[in-house]
Amino acid sequence: MLPAFETALLSRFADARPAALMEACRYPLRTGGKRIRPLLAFAAAQACGDRRAALGAAVAVELLHTYSLVHDDLPCMDDDDERRGRPTVHKVYNEGVAVLVGDALLTEAFAVLAARAGNRAAQRAQLVGELAAAGGAGGMIAGQAYDIGMDGPILDVDRLRVLHRAKTGALIRAAVRMGAIAAGAPAGRLTALTRYAEEVGLAFQVHDDVLDADQDAGRGDGGPPSFVKLLGVDGARTAALTHMEAALAALQPLSRTSPERSAVAPLAAIAIFTVERVA
Image (cartoon, rainbow, N blue to C red; front, side, top):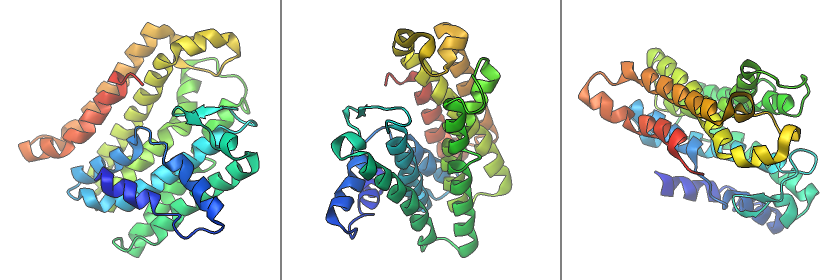
C-alpha cells in the first residue's frame, strides 16, 4: 500500500495556486521519513479485515504530522535547520512561507477525510473527530505546550509520559484507531488496538530518547526533558522494552487463531521495530 499512499499524498497540491505554494507544500512531504503513522493505519485496518480502507486515514495523518514538523522547526519553537537530512522549510523558503505551508498541510488533512468517498457520512465524521482530537489542544498542541514549559518544568517520569502521550502518542493512537475505524472495527477490537497504540507511542518516544542520548548529554541541563535524563540510558532502554511488550500483549486477544495471528503480524512487527531501529 505504500506506493499508492505516496501517490495519493503527493497528489494533494496538484492544483494549488500560486504554483510556488504548491512546490513549498510538497517539499516537506517529499523528504520521506519512516512513515510509521501511515504504516500503523494500514496495519490496523488489515487487522480488521480491509487494509485498503485506510488510505484516506493514512494520508490525512501524515499531512497533519508533517504540518507539526514544519511548525516545530520554526525559530520560535525548536529552531532546527535540518529535518531528515535536508534543510527545513523555513530555511529553504522563509518563516512566513513555512507558517503557510504548515497551515495548508493541516487544513488539507481534514479535506482528505471529508471527501473520502469510500466512507459513510457517520464514519467520515468519526475519522475527522479522531484526527481533530489528536492534533488539537488536548493532544499534540498540549504536548508541545508541556514541552516548551507552559506547565512548569518536567522533573519526573510520570509528567514526561503525560507530555509524550500528547505530543507523540496522540497521533500514533489516532493513526491506529482511524485505520481500524475505516475498516469497520467492532468495539472490542478497537479497544484492544487503542491499548496497543498507546504503548507503541511511548515505546517509540522512549527509544527516540535513547537514540538521542549523545545529543542530550551534549546539551546538558538546558536541553528538552527526556527519559534518558530521568532514567539513564539503561533505564530508558528497559522502559522502551516494557512498553513494547505491553503493546504485544494488547494484541494477544486478537491473535488466538492462526488467521488472526497473521492479520495482526504487521502490528507486532511495527511494535518490535520501534525499539530495534537505529535511526
